Length: 348
Ligand SMILES: NC(=O)c1ccc[n+]([C@@H]2O[C@H](COP(=O)([O-])OP(=O)(O)OC[C@H]3O[C@@H](n4cnc5c(N)ncnc54)[C@H](O)[C@@H]3O)[C@@H](O)[C@H]2O)c1
Image (cartoon, rainbow, N blue to C red; front, side, top):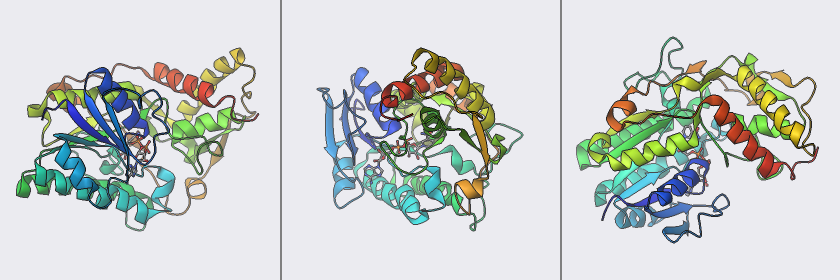
């Protein structure tokens, strides 16, 4: 079987759906597996796409997926920060127990497992410098429940290394740094409940004419990456197995670093421009921003790293990968999609 036949687990998610779309354009044969196909319109119909509605972790499913594909890419997870300190057990099950079963089966069948981990495994990180793949993890205390997700992801990475050494698994780990794009998350009250990740959260407030919630002064800095750049990295991993097997890669765009408060301000400005040409959209609230405490907004046990800047020199060197999309283009691309997709669904 060739590397052009891949299984994408979590294909119905934000990154998974973009990855399937990209791989199909590049002539891959893709089996897509997820609990839901709601984000896959236009993809389901592709002749090289084989869709299966499935909980990949149940029963014989991990074995069947590993047996039938030379490469499995796992982008399935519960990965919404509002769950980390409220549904810790489900989050840890989803990010350790479930992928552990799939990894064990991949070791058994000789399947190459490309696994989506997270930049959160670096923990608090180091605010003074970029995070390299060799930077040690610095996770918060057990009492700070918010680290449940990162702890489970990190343990799974260690499990993959153990499987490589003891059972010959071929693995690749992707550590995404804040990927953005269309189809990310949901708008609360329209197609989901609770607090989505920052792009959907700010977009939701804008579409509802509400002030954007700024957590703990909005001082935290993140480097945002256009989803099209991220899925290109996965294509390069597939094309370069000898450079990418048994390696972890930071996938992020250090040029797009910004604080949360500056992100909110930029999104307000972009939305104002879009709204001026689309008067059916709600106008920006006055004041446009409101300040909230993290422990009140996300609940007790919430904390976060102040800065998460990727060092991507390893992916640049081994994969010749270079993110191309600047922050303004990324934010426009997201807000244009959110306003077109949800603009008529959200009441002023
Ligand atoms: N988007 C980011 O910026 C980012 C950052 C760091 C890490 N990641 C990681 O990248 C991966 C993809 O993230 P995303 O943003 O696309 O998330 P997402 O929530 O949009 O997609 C995850 C998908 O996994 C599916 N899923 C969960 N459990 C499943 C199961 N048991 N069986 C079948 N499907 C299941 C969900 O239905 C969902 O469609 C995740 O592993 C996430 O932890 C993403």
